[in-house]
Amino acid sequence: MTFAARGAALAVLLAATPASAGFEAELEASLVVASRNDLRIPGDKGTTISLVDDLSLSAAPAFRLRFGYRIADRHLITALYAPLQVKARGSVGRDVRFLDATYPAGTPLVAVYRFDSYRLTYRYSIFWRDNLDLAAGFSAKIRDAETSLYGAESRQKTNTGFVPLLNVHVAWRPGNGAFGVVLDIDALAAPQGRAEDILLAATWTFYEGLDLRECYRMVEGGA
Image 1 (cartoon, rainbow, N blue to C red):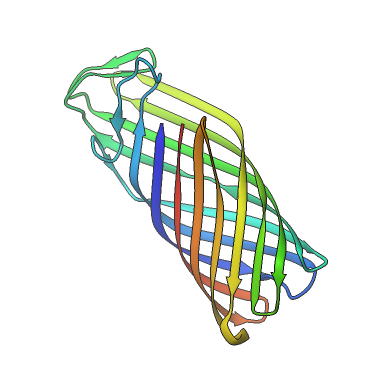
Image 2: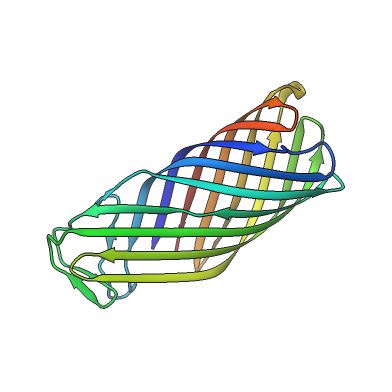
């Protein structure tokens, strides 16, 4: 199963990255547009269908909530809750085999793809200045995924598991002014699969301790 999503996101950072140790929180609201979502379940006998090409997949609202605590300036620990669900409708011009059910060609289908993510991240600021933060670390991710197909019959496939990721973070405010850019990456690839979560954002510090971010986030993975 592979999934790729790209979308514009607007994020508000409460208690923005502090100049010293302290708590911070971030709320991100976004509109998710999937550019690829292919599945075949089971992998050896199921029918490959695309929720994007074979069906009609609608853009979906999403949000993320992150809490963090900075220790001695350079050490940051964060916890993330990021639910995600997209839905597709339509019919396929061939028989579809999904789990132990067969959906005849032309059967009206509703497919639901859910991929909720829980992460605990630690990163260390290798270079730390008032206007530049260059950091690296790692994330422990728990994914709670479900793929469901509704038609003449209803079938659901759930999957929960642990995924380790590497984290890279760059935040820069030229001239230590109000505007800046942020790049944040959680990613790792292995023979068993891959996962990437990449954020590029323009930031505006409109009040001390508060940032507004306009973001583009790309989420992609497969197994």
